Amino acid sequence: MGLPLLGETLSLLVTAKSIDIHPFFKERMSRYGPLFKTSLAGRSIVISADPDFNSFLFQQEGKLVEVWYMDSFAKLLRQDTTAASGYVHKYLRHLVLNHFGVETLKHRLLPQLERAINQRLQEWVKQPEVQLKDQTAAMIFEFTAKHMLSYEPEKSSDTIALNLSNFLEGLMAFPIRVPGTAFYRCKKRQQKVIQVISKLVEDRMNSGEGERISKTDFLDQIVEDMRTESFLTKEFATHVLFGILLASFETVSSTIALAIKYLSDHPSLLQQLTEHEQILNKKRRDCNPGLEDGLEWEDYKSMHFTNNVINESLRLANVAPGILRRVIKDIHVNGYIIPQGWAIMVVPAALQLNPEAFEDPLTFNPSRWRNIGSNATAKNFMAFGGGNRTCAGAEFSKVLMAIFLHVLVTKYRWKKMKGGDVVRAPTLGFANGFTISVLEKEP
Image (cartoon, rainbow, N blue to C red; front, side, top):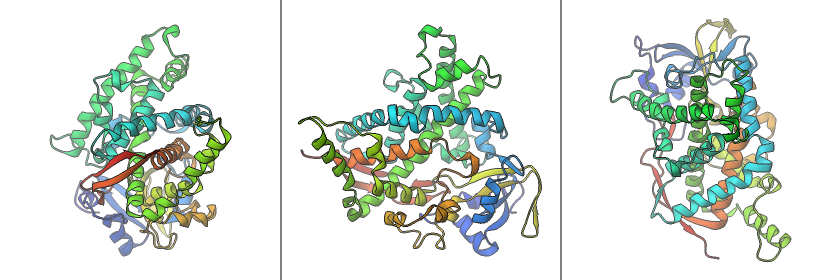
């Protein structure tokens, strides 16, 4: 259980120069098996790399376990760790699906995404080089913030995206508010973002119905629902919006950067993304001469190899180190008892990088997904969580990554400039960044 108060936290925060499972988990799995106990940031916690136990656990939501966040995360979001339970969770999930779900993607967001990505890549062409992860995060944030809050960064002096960059570093830190610590830096950046979002919420609350955007954005819907939902206070709405914005880009931007790194390292795989040219050729044949329609939902669904690239990037990325639950009733497993009040961390990397589930697991091999059935991945692939709390924005994230790859490979070419060395600390990152230069393709 490690040292008093600290537990084994310091070992978890060590930077590992590999895409592999973080040594903290790997060494203890080798010593104790796929279920073991430890203490992190003053909390007694069970680590699970057991697919069968994880599957059982996710079925026990509200019975034996409840959603829980690290104390650092809860403090940064001012989020009661039980606040996302039951009715509130259902409300928020429904709200996210209404604004980012399949139907909205089909009829509104897909063409908007394509335009936004193309505009951003045109800006990258004008720069000698770009830090891919940071610039992708900014692009995703600005799109999401505009869709959710009608926020226009070009008209604001507040750099929300910059303050949210690399925020996961603070979420995994020991929650001590001391200058110089990752948590302290994270808290300062969070306060700046909260001030901006709080002002947007307040302005929308004070605006007349005629001034609103007819409930076309996420914030309008929340302000409208404040009339009937008692839990929707200004403070709660502000922190929920902050959390959703954070979730919308941090993991996706890292996964996109990882995909581009692997495609740069394996040109033969890049050459297999021919389906994007086929989509364009079909559109040229079907359209009037000189005209070329944007992507449609059927085009996205036809991107089979692209989907394999995305799944393989998600499998290897494992951006966040774990999925957390808190025990609300003693759990009996393998002759042991996990006591009420303890936490459980499911470690996706231990499943998604398991050689028994995925052959040669550290190799980037999108083709493996051609023959993987849903039964094989049900317990071993949880890029978007598990149980009834799978990410409501999962389809939005996959569409965004697919459209990004489509625009990039059909209209541009890129060159790796420097960096790209993957590390886990325990969140995924690039030790010295990952810089590329982007050029337009010649007609």
